Image 1: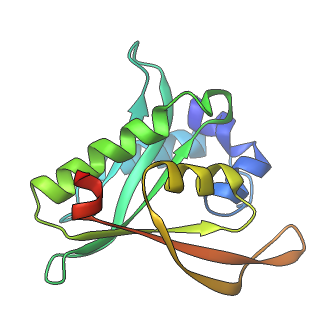
Image 2 (image 1 turned 180 degrees about the vertical axis):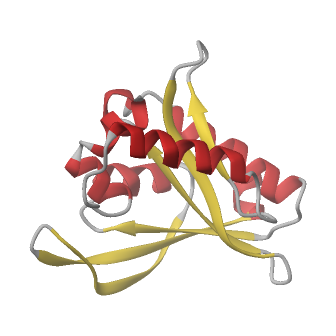
Length: 159
């Protein structure tokens, strides 16, 4: 199971979210089934990302959705063996197109750990602007790291 294999990648887990206590393959399967059965919760969604031939390569989610103010956040995680193949940028563009053009959102933000150079490059490649830095927000691997806030407006996405 790809999600279970990905759970064993400590560096990837840290970059995406956090390093969690290990779980069994059956536990990961149960988690994946539970996530799949949830479906959307309003505009909060979690989707699998697949290659064109149907191989699971990662996931993307929207969260902190505020339809009144037109803002939301997203996160994307690609399994290490599929990094830098365009899956993240394609998935993010699809998500943004839906939120901006169908749900009338105005702004998206992404919170990126300072040590995650791949995600920083992804945000900048997609046209996001760094809007802030929160000092010592993330603790992992024995030390604190800054967290960067990147933002993109609907008008900037349309360009």
